[in-house]
Amino acid sequence: MEALHSRVLVLWVGGAALAAAVLAAVAGALAWADPLGFAFPPLAVAAGVFGVVFVLGAAYAGLRYRLWRFEVREDTLYIERGVFTRVRTVVPYVRVQHIDSQRGPAERALGLATVVVYTAGSRGADVSVPGLARTRANDLQERLRALAIESEPSDAV
Image 1 (tube, rainbow, N blue to C red):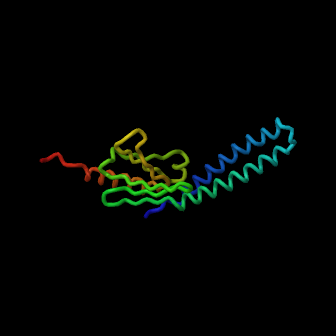
Image 2 (tube, rainbow, N blue to C red):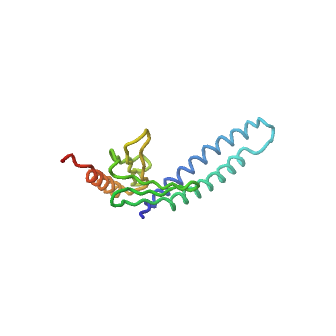
Image 3 (spheres, one colour):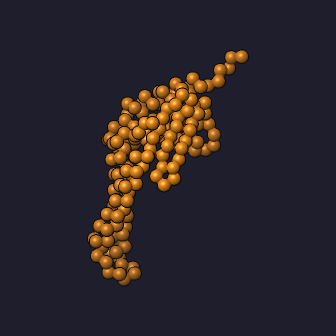
């Protein structure tokens, strides 16, 4: 089983820091407005909220990174992920419609990419493999494309 690139942990911890900062700002503003009359110092409230949310978010990101695995098998793409709810996904290549590579601004800054595999089926029938080095994402996209083409049934009778 293949793991994600370790730089994805930086991306996920950064997301936790951003969420912690937003929640700390809201908590600090509420403490400053003091609608319930508690008279807590706004800076202390903001710092406490930031600390708790950041530590929990960083721990979650670490567990998420540690538990995320995928494997390109002979006839399927196999993915294991999830911290609280473990999810195992098997994508048969015969069901693959197309494969995208995505790189947002933060991913580009870290040299990472996400490969998205769209499958036949209902709306939202896609799986993603995040946190891949750019070259690994390109290689994975090409390999999955080749395996999907290879698994197509032939029309010849």
